[in-house]
Length: 125
Image 1 (cartoon, rainbow, N blue to C red):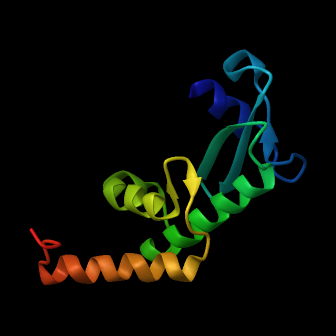
Image 2 (image 1 turned 120 degrees about the vertical axis):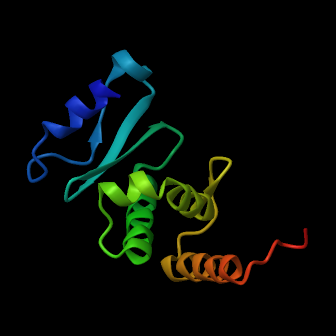
């Protein structure tokens, strides 16, 4: 984790793309795909079978949903509301497969779940 952070945090966003490689960590078939938003870094490691642009789009969708749910997401939101962050990620990706990339549908699903939680629904239990 420290090696990845050191690798991507020293890169200048204006001069570098969002892809990096570190063969000593993951081997020659893997890429580090990341986006830097304000003080947050979102990092994915994928093999050559994954689309790099697809992963960048996935990161963009994830950040947009986080911004919608937390109103300008910051580190503290991710730390203190990790359960909500995991739920949001579960709405987007499950078992390694991207389920949804429409930000509006994801936010709507999260709002519906919040509403059910507020009503005290136990989902039939």
